[in-house]
Image 1 (spheres, helix red, strand yellow):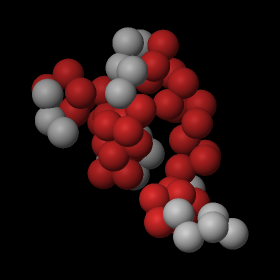
Image 2 (cartoon, helix red, strand yellow):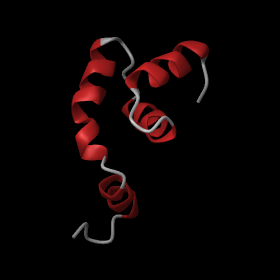
Image 3 (cartoon, one colour):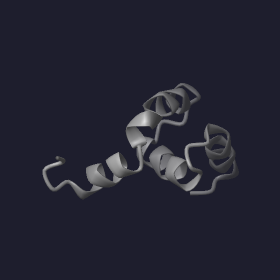
Length: 60
């Protein structure tokens, strides 16, 4: 399905594509590091509020 792309496979399994609107919102807020945002979304189970709090607190 993902042509042996491990990162894409993990993203698909975690439902990351559902997070595209959230990633767009984070970018509009000025948080432009998409990879960091994905990492924090995984950590926080898709909660934009928790991601923003982590970003503001400087947690990675």
